[in-house]
Length: 86
Image (cartoon, rainbow, N blue to C red):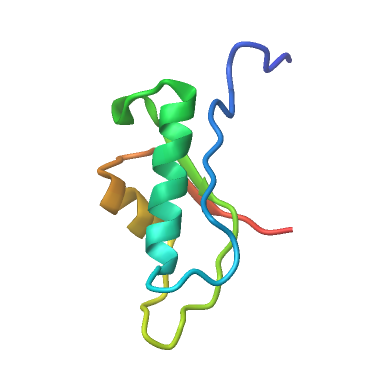
């Protein structure tokens, strides 16, 4: 079975790295996703899956962050959600 023309990671989003004052984990995730959507030339309605790379422990002043929450803030309704780390 070939996966050709069936699945694609179509965009890359990135953010500033390191300690960036006044930024939350959520703001980094949202910026990276928005950049990836733009890079891919997609609309939010085109997206059917969201994988957040890593589940970082929440800072002391933040709530725990999940890929579901990121999708909600982006206005996405993906059929697949995951968090992955290596």
